[in-house]
Image (tube, rainbow, N blue to C red; front, side, top):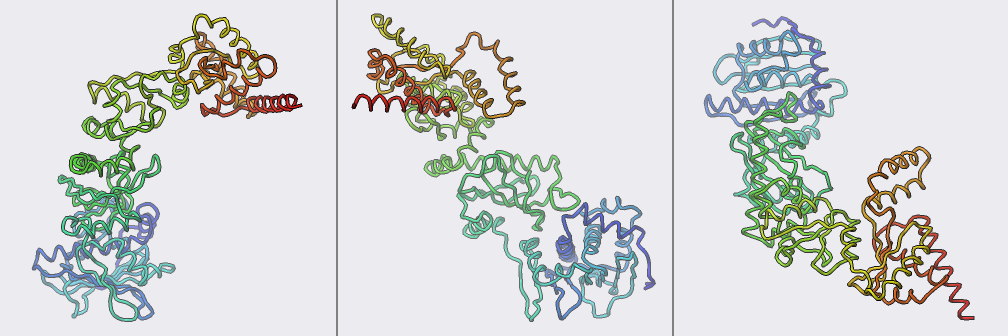
Amino acid sequence: MSADEQHFQVDLRGVVDLLSRHIYSGPRVYLRELLQNARDAITARDEVDGAGGRIRITPLSDRSDEFVMRDDGVGLTADEVGELLATVGRSSKRDIFDLPRHEYLGQFGIGLLSCFMVADEIVIRSRSARGGEPVEWSGRTDGTFTVSPGPADTPVGTSVHLRPRFGSEDLLRTTSVMQLAQTFAEFLGVRIDIDLPGGGESRIDRAAPFLDARSTPDAAVEYGAELLGTAPFAVVPIDAAGTGTRGLAYVLPYAPPPGSHQAARVYLNRMLLSERVDDLLPDWAFFVRAVVDSTALSPTASRESLVEDDALENTRTDLGQAIRRWILDLGLSAPERLAQFVAIHEVSLKALVRHDDELARFITRWLSVETTSGRMTIGDLVTRFPSVRYAATVDEYRQVAGLESGVGPLVNGGYLYDSEIIELLPELFPAVTVERVDVLTEFERLDPPPFDDRPSAISLEDRATAALSDVDCTVIVRSLELDDVPAVYVADPAVLRRIDRGRARGATGGLWSSVLNTIDDATAGMQEDAATSARLCLNWANPIVQGLIRASGEPFDRTVQLLYVQALLAGHRPLAPRDRALMTRALGAMIDLSARSAD
């Protein structure tokens, strides 16, 4: 074997630049690649003679000017070193990234190249468990390398010696090496010892609690608390046998922000792939954080994410079904626990049941909605009131709630997914009927005053409408069952949108105001049959309204104006500048009237 200097057939500097800038997220992955090589070598030796099983790392320190990783794996023969050099010395950069990573030498070659991101010189000393003399390979970033016989005392296995590049020293020192080794390989399944600068060693490998949860449930919960920062609500075993993927899903004990997605921590053959894989679980499962290990999912070239292929899609489906089964089992075995889970993750579950018929039939009764009789579970609602009425928007709900006719509670369908859930009820509960109500229809159901009182009511409507001429509101008199409510503000959605656009025009510049005017002009033709203004419904059954019949002049006008403002506030409508001005004038006038009366 010649020790003459030779040259790589590729532009090594260009390859290293490509690795660091476009393939890997950073040079820290050098240790992951070396650990992967060492573990593969140990696995290969087990097939040869059943020996091996340890990795030792000596970091860069004041005592040593080189980083060394040793393994007692299968090692390399002289012929295999030659094959390795042929593999990493291909004629193009593209070929290098098509190396057969599933094969030992292909994987070793990628690991070797990654080391050039942190080292100017790499020395490999190896002796094969299959026999033969030791061999030494030395490569440098200038693109040259030598191959020569290794030291006679080289043990079976491989040692990698790195001399750091300028600026990369810290990545090869003890603190960084211990942190990276623990991050990437604490569950690798082989013993990893790190030599300490002051003597002694630190062992960083440990059992994977997310793979042995049934035998060590406390450790699995403790690991989940480390992952989430707090104790998980539940720990759910998940697996996809087709790709050898298994682990745990930790159910969050709090509701995540809307639209968030809980990325999964993924290991491949117990080596960390990534802390944050976004596409392992279905989108609806954002109430869990998963940790899994897989033996068959395919990594990308960087080994930091997963290839989106059929295997990943099938795995995603299987893991989602495991989470779904847990929810179903929870309802059968611990309904009180299910109620707690629903209370925390209700929005997530509402998103889920819209697309999952089986889960919808089971879980929907535990979901809750806002009604005029208070917040109720859907199960309680359909049991007590099989004819379900709902308003599709929050504005309509608030208005219709003020017009309630006493035929049963009204459901607020204005919150996220609630209208869609209510519309599903007849499919889930065959005896249930659902009716969507709107403010104009409900208004038309209200009884007018008795026939003998009609002249007084019509006069009241005309005078009250005149008192509200500044705010473009028509007054109608009807009889409400709630006699303690003097007035209700009523406007259909189209009118409310027009009013809101009017308020926006007053608060914006000319360009936006012109846009809003165009919208009003375009929609004017569609509103011919609808009310063109909001309406204030005075309750004929209320004593204050009855008192207005006998009032006149300024006391009448100011009372009507205050009832209008009160109805706006009761309906949670914002006060426009002209509404506030009307309220200020009315209150001032009432104070003046009171003062004059006292005099």
